[in-house]
Amino acid sequence: MRAPYQLRNVLVREEGEGPLVVLVHGYPLDGDMWEEVSRRLASRFRVLRPDLPSRRDTPHPMQPTMAEYARWIAAVIEAAGGKAGVAGFSMGGYVLFELLRQKPQMVTAAAFVDTQAGPDTPEGREARNRSLATAREMGPTAVSEAMIPRLLSKQGRSDPALVGRVRAMVRRQNPNSLENDVLAMRDRADSIPSLPSIAAASLVVVGSEDAITPPEKAESIARAIPGAKLVRIEGAGHLSPMERPEEVATALGELFSKPAG
Ligand code: MLT
Image (cartoon, rainbow, N blue to C red):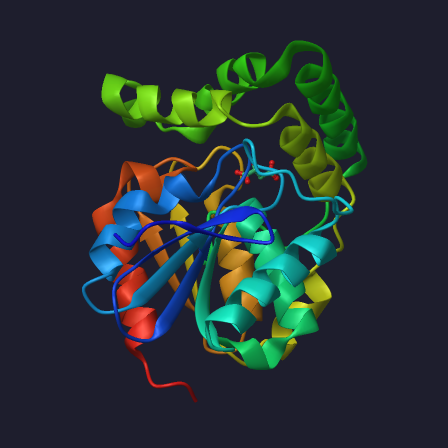
Protein backbone atom coordinates (compact mmCIF):
# COMPACT_ATOMS: atom_id res chain seq x y z
CA MET A 1 0.00 0.00 0.00
CA ARG A 2 1.23 3.52 -0.79
CA ALA A 3 1.57 5.93 2.14
CA PRO A 4 -1.84 7.26 3.18
CA TYR A 5 -2.25 10.92 2.28
CA GLN A 6 -4.37 13.74 3.62
CA LEU A 7 -6.86 15.71 1.60
CA ARG A 8 -8.21 18.74 3.51
CA ASN A 9 -6.73 17.17 6.70
CA VAL A 10 -8.63 13.90 6.24
CA LEU A 11 -6.90 10.55 5.78
CA VAL A 12 -7.18 8.75 2.42
CA ARG A 13 -5.57 5.30 1.98
CA GLU A 14 -4.70 4.20 -1.54
CA GLU A 15 -3.40 1.01 -3.16
CA GLY A 16 -3.32 -0.71 -6.55
CA GLU A 17 -3.43 0.37 -10.18
CA GLY A 18 -6.33 0.42 -12.65
CA PRO A 19 -9.83 1.89 -12.81
CA LEU A 20 -10.66 4.02 -9.76
CA VAL A 21 -12.70 2.46 -6.95
CA VAL A 22 -13.74 4.33 -3.78
CA LEU A 23 -14.91 2.45 -0.67
CA VAL A 24 -17.01 4.47 1.81
CA HIS A 25 -17.12 3.26 5.41
CA GLY A 26 -19.98 3.03 7.91
CA TYR A 27 -20.61 4.02 11.52
CA PRO A 28 -18.85 3.92 14.01
CA LEU A 29 -15.88 2.95 11.88
CA ASP A 30 -13.32 4.38 9.47
CA GLY A 31 -11.69 3.49 6.15
CA ASP A 32 -9.78 0.62 7.75
CA MET A 33 -12.96 -1.44 7.81
CA TRP A 34 -12.34 -2.03 4.08
CA GLU A 35 -8.70 -3.12 4.48
CA GLU A 36 -9.16 -6.79 3.55
CA VAL A 37 -11.53 -6.06 0.67
CA SER A 38 -9.23 -3.33 -0.66
CA ARG A 39 -6.16 -5.60 -0.60
CA ARG A 40 -8.01 -8.10 -2.79
CA LEU A 41 -9.31 -5.48 -5.24
CA ALA A 42 -5.92 -3.76 -5.52
CA SER A 43 -4.59 -6.38 -7.96
CA ARG A 44 -6.97 -4.92 -10.58
CA PHE A 45 -8.08 -1.48 -9.39
CA ARG A 46 -6.77 1.73 -7.90
CA VAL A 47 -8.60 1.60 -4.59
CA LEU A 48 -9.16 4.60 -2.28
CA ARG A 49 -10.42 4.19 1.29
CA PRO A 50 -11.08 7.70 2.58
CA ASP A 51 -12.12 8.41 6.13
CA LEU A 52 -15.15 10.60 6.42
CA PRO A 53 -14.13 13.92 8.01
CA SER A 54 -13.47 14.33 11.74
CA ARG A 55 -12.39 10.70 12.31
CA ARG A 56 -9.75 10.24 14.94
CA ASP A 57 -7.33 13.16 15.01
CA THR A 58 -8.20 14.63 11.61
CA PRO A 59 -10.70 17.35 12.48
CA HIS A 60 -12.49 19.03 9.61
CA PRO A 61 -15.22 21.61 10.10
CA MET A 62 -18.37 20.49 8.36
CA GLN A 63 -22.11 20.27 8.86
CA PRO A 64 -23.06 16.76 9.95
CA THR A 65 -25.33 15.90 7.02
CA MET A 66 -25.20 13.10 4.46
CA ALA A 67 -25.21 15.78 1.72
CA GLU A 68 -22.00 17.24 3.19
CA TYR A 69 -20.43 13.77 3.54
CA ALA A 70 -21.26 13.16 -0.14
CA ARG A 71 -19.62 16.47 -1.12
CA TRP A 72 -16.50 15.23 0.67
CA ILE A 73 -16.50 11.92 -1.25
CA ALA A 74 -17.07 13.89 -4.48
CA ALA A 75 -13.96 15.97 -3.64
CA VAL A 76 -11.93 12.77 -3.12
CA ILE A 77 -13.08 11.41 -6.50
CA GLU A 78 -12.49 14.76 -8.22
CA ALA A 79 -8.92 14.91 -6.88
CA ALA A 80 -8.28 11.35 -8.13
CA GLY A 81 -9.55 11.80 -11.69
CA GLY A 82 -13.26 12.59 -11.67
CA LYS A 83 -15.04 9.21 -12.00
CA ALA A 84 -15.11 6.07 -9.86
CA GLY A 85 -16.87 2.87 -9.03
CA VAL A 86 -18.17 3.49 -5.50
CA ALA A 87 -19.14 1.06 -2.74
CA GLY A 88 -20.91 2.35 0.35
CA PHE A 89 -21.27 0.22 3.46
CA SER A 90 -24.31 1.01 5.61
CA MET A 91 -23.91 4.73 6.46
CA GLY A 92 -21.55 4.79 3.46
CA GLY A 93 -24.54 3.60 1.41
CA TYR A 94 -26.55 6.60 2.67
CA VAL A 95 -23.64 8.76 1.46
CA LEU A 96 -23.66 6.98 -1.91
CA PHE A 97 -27.39 7.67 -2.41
CA GLU A 98 -26.63 11.38 -1.82
CA LEU A 99 -23.64 11.31 -4.17
CA LEU A 100 -25.81 9.74 -6.88
CA ARG A 101 -28.26 12.63 -6.49
CA GLN A 102 -25.52 15.29 -6.46
CA LYS A 103 -23.10 13.97 -9.09
CA PRO A 104 -24.53 10.93 -10.90
CA GLN A 105 -21.99 11.33 -13.71
CA MET A 106 -19.15 10.69 -11.23
CA VAL A 107 -20.29 7.18 -10.33
CA THR A 108 -19.46 4.56 -12.97
CA ALA A 109 -20.92 1.71 -10.88
CA ALA A 110 -22.55 1.64 -7.44
CA ALA A 111 -22.44 -1.03 -4.73
CA PHE A 112 -24.79 -0.79 -1.76
CA VAL A 113 -23.39 -3.01 0.97
CA ASP A 114 -25.49 -3.87 4.06
CA THR A 115 -27.50 -0.66 3.81
CA GLN A 116 -31.04 0.64 3.42
CA ALA A 117 -32.72 3.32 1.31
CA GLY A 118 -35.52 4.48 3.63
CA PRO A 119 -35.24 7.16 6.35
CA ASP A 120 -35.36 6.50 10.10
CA THR A 121 -38.80 5.77 11.56
CA PRO A 122 -39.93 7.94 14.51
CA GLU A 123 -38.81 5.12 16.85
CA GLY A 124 -35.49 4.95 14.96
CA ARG A 125 -34.99 8.69 15.50
CA GLU A 126 -35.63 8.23 19.21
CA ALA A 127 -33.01 5.46 19.26
CA ARG A 128 -30.58 7.85 17.51
CA ASN A 129 -31.17 10.40 20.29
CA ARG A 130 -30.27 7.73 22.85
CA SER A 131 -27.13 6.86 20.81
CA LEU A 132 -26.20 10.55 20.80
CA ALA A 133 -26.43 10.61 24.59
CA THR A 134 -24.26 7.47 24.82
CA ALA A 135 -21.64 8.95 22.49
CA ARG A 136 -21.63 12.31 24.32
CA GLU A 137 -21.76 11.10 27.90
CA MET A 138 -19.96 7.76 27.79
CA GLY A 139 -17.74 7.97 24.69
CA PRO A 140 -16.41 5.47 22.12
CA THR A 141 -15.84 2.57 24.53
CA ALA A 142 -19.52 2.47 25.45
CA VAL A 143 -20.46 2.83 21.77
CA SER A 144 -18.24 -0.14 20.86
CA GLU A 145 -19.82 -2.39 23.51
CA ALA A 146 -23.32 -1.41 22.36
CA MET A 147 -22.55 -1.89 18.67
CA ILE A 148 -20.43 -5.04 18.42
CA PRO A 149 -23.31 -7.49 19.08
CA ARG A 150 -25.28 -5.79 16.29
CA LEU A 151 -22.41 -5.40 13.82
CA LEU A 152 -21.26 -9.04 13.82
CA SER A 153 -23.00 -12.38 13.26
CA LYS A 154 -22.92 -15.10 15.91
CA GLN A 155 -19.99 -16.65 14.07
CA GLY A 156 -18.21 -13.29 13.82
CA ARG A 157 -18.66 -12.68 17.54
CA SER A 158 -16.94 -15.98 18.25
CA ASP A 159 -13.75 -14.83 16.46
CA PRO A 160 -11.65 -12.98 19.07
CA ALA A 161 -9.26 -11.48 16.49
CA LEU A 162 -12.14 -10.00 14.48
CA VAL A 163 -13.91 -8.70 17.60
CA GLY A 164 -10.61 -7.16 18.74
CA ARG A 165 -10.11 -5.35 15.43
CA VAL A 166 -13.65 -3.97 15.39
CA ARG A 167 -13.45 -2.92 19.04
CA ALA A 168 -10.12 -1.13 18.53
CA MET A 169 -11.47 0.67 15.45
CA VAL A 170 -14.56 1.97 17.27
CA ARG A 171 -12.61 2.96 20.38
CA ARG A 172 -10.11 5.10 18.51
CA GLN A 173 -12.84 7.27 16.95
CA ASN A 174 -13.11 10.91 17.81
CA PRO A 175 -16.28 11.36 19.98
CA ASN A 176 -17.11 14.32 17.77
CA SER A 177 -17.28 12.14 14.66
CA LEU A 178 -19.58 9.65 16.41
CA GLU A 179 -21.98 12.48 17.26
CA ASN A 180 -21.78 13.90 13.74
CA ASP A 181 -22.53 10.52 12.20
CA VAL A 182 -25.55 9.88 14.42
CA LEU A 183 -26.98 13.34 13.60
CA ALA A 184 -26.37 12.81 9.87
CA MET A 185 -27.99 9.36 9.94
CA ARG A 186 -30.96 10.54 12.05
CA ASP A 187 -31.77 13.39 9.68
CA ARG A 188 -30.95 11.69 6.37
CA ALA A 189 -33.29 11.96 3.39
CA ASP A 190 -35.55 9.21 2.14
CA SER A 191 -33.68 7.68 -0.82
CA ILE A 192 -36.47 5.31 -1.88
CA PRO A 193 -37.97 7.78 -4.43
CA SER A 194 -34.61 8.16 -6.21
CA LEU A 195 -33.90 4.43 -6.65
CA PRO A 196 -35.68 3.98 -10.03
CA SER A 197 -33.61 6.80 -11.56
CA ILE A 198 -30.20 5.32 -10.65
CA ALA A 199 -28.59 4.68 -14.02
CA ALA A 200 -25.19 3.35 -12.85
CA ALA A 201 -24.67 -0.43 -12.93
CA SER A 202 -25.67 -1.43 -9.40
CA LEU A 203 -25.00 -4.21 -6.95
CA VAL A 204 -26.62 -4.80 -3.58
CA VAL A 205 -24.77 -6.98 -1.04
CA VAL A 206 -26.18 -8.21 2.26
CA GLY A 207 -25.22 -10.66 4.98
CA SER A 208 -28.06 -13.10 5.67
CA GLU A 209 -27.63 -12.40 9.42
CA ASP A 210 -27.49 -8.61 9.10
CA ALA A 211 -29.28 -7.36 12.24
CA ILE A 212 -29.05 -3.62 11.45
CA THR A 213 -30.13 -3.52 7.79
CA PRO A 214 -31.66 -6.99 7.26
CA PRO A 215 -31.95 -8.76 3.88
CA GLU A 216 -35.48 -7.43 3.21
CA LYS A 217 -34.01 -3.91 3.02
CA ALA A 218 -31.42 -5.05 0.48
CA GLU A 219 -34.03 -6.93 -1.54
CA SER A 220 -36.21 -3.83 -1.82
CA ILE A 221 -33.25 -1.73 -3.03
CA ALA A 222 -32.38 -4.38 -5.64
CA ARG A 223 -35.99 -4.54 -6.84
CA ALA A 224 -36.23 -0.75 -7.27
CA ILE A 225 -32.94 0.00 -9.10
CA PRO A 226 -33.21 -1.00 -12.77
CA GLY A 227 -30.99 -4.02 -13.51
CA ALA A 228 -29.46 -4.20 -10.01
CA LYS A 229 -27.92 -7.48 -8.92
CA LEU A 230 -28.37 -8.84 -5.37
CA VAL A 231 -25.69 -10.90 -3.62
CA ARG A 232 -26.59 -12.49 -0.28
CA ILE A 233 -23.71 -13.72 1.86
CA GLU A 234 -24.95 -16.68 3.89
CA GLY A 235 -24.07 -16.52 7.57
CA ALA A 236 -22.50 -13.04 7.46
CA GLY A 237 -23.69 -10.27 9.77
CA HIS A 238 -23.97 -6.53 9.12
CA LEU A 239 -20.21 -6.04 8.89
CA SER A 240 -19.85 -8.45 5.95
CA PRO A 241 -16.78 -6.65 4.46
CA MET A 242 -14.82 -7.53 7.63
CA GLU A 243 -16.44 -10.93 8.27
CA ARG A 244 -16.30 -12.22 4.68
CA PRO A 245 -13.91 -9.99 2.69
CA GLU A 246 -13.26 -12.63 0.02
CA GLU A 247 -16.90 -12.89 -1.01
CA VAL A 248 -17.50 -9.14 -0.81
CA ALA A 249 -14.38 -8.43 -2.90
CA THR A 250 -15.43 -11.00 -5.51
CA ALA A 251 -18.86 -9.39 -5.89
CA LEU A 252 -17.42 -5.85 -6.04
CA GLY A 253 -14.67 -6.91 -8.47
CA GLU A 254 -17.24 -8.31 -10.85
CA LEU A 255 -19.31 -5.10 -10.73
CA PHE A 256 -16.37 -2.74 -11.14
CA SER A 257 -14.92 -4.73 -14.07
CA LYS A 258 -18.02 -4.18 -16.18
CA PRO A 259 -17.55 -1.55 -18.87
CA ALA A 260 -19.53 1.60 -17.88
CA GLY A 261 -22.80 1.65 -19.86
C1 MLT B 1 -23.67 1.69 9.98
O1 MLT B 1 -23.29 0.51 10.07
O2 MLT B 1 -23.10 2.51 9.24
C2 MLT B 1 -24.82 2.15 10.85
O3 MLT B 1 -25.00 1.27 11.90
C3 MLT B 1 -26.08 2.29 10.05
C4 MLT B 1 -27.25 2.79 10.85
O4 MLT B 1 -27.20 2.78 12.08
O5 MLT B 1 -28.25 3.20 10.23
